[in-house]
Length: 351
Image (tube, rainbow, N blue to C red; front, side):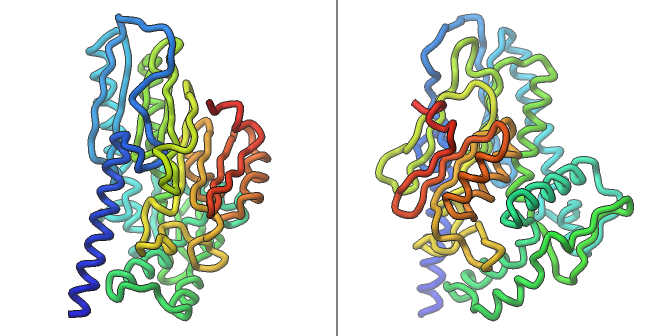
């Protein structure tokens, strides 16, 4: 009876989480950041056709919107962008069998890595360095431990179990050279979830730009990339979800070019109190407790993706200092209790 009760409780948590994700993607304010379907005031041009398509990719809902004077051109580029996302997902998907990342996790060795995977691995090394180890793609064994523990017992793993898995977490034990990539400890595994989605969205956006599209938006489950606004002199309004649930959004700003991503303790969590979730502090083996939401505005989604995770792990003050040390980066940190920490230029972009 007790096991049945645990199972039913766990199913409710999972179903609620999936519901939150879907509702947020469609602009109901329950995922981060929310794209509100209302452009900022500006000049309206009747000769622009706005095409928007939504598909399930990368484990989330991806919406691509393109505005162009040619409807045919807009539609074709939406399809090309989705094709690019599908192509790249086959490289980075750790859940599917026989992808490069899943083979690396299974064997600890991958030869002849693609330029795309090599790029993301090198970028991961960069963010590991500037975040002083907060961003670490080798954290997967600890995440899997939490997942299995909650699935089987409904509670967190023991400290002994966590410490054992933490022995496998160290970016320095990844070796990348001409022979490929190797994980130097048996049992090591990587997750590129905190950076690959951003990279993929950026590549789709770059393809759209190369094909002459001036106005577009890609929203991959809250990882957002904007090209040229929603038409001439028309910005998109971006709403950041209120992590305390007191209102629909906690901050609004306009975006014509660039990217935004948010990491929050309410995105993917193991327990109903959201104490243990998908972000792990590699210095402790546990989820951070000081921050409940970290939003980064950056030129690319990959930057915003990796940095939002990094800033979530650091203390709010350290996070703002890190954001301030980087070019073209703005950040909003919401601490437990609701106190906000903003980078020096954040107030210049919000309304």
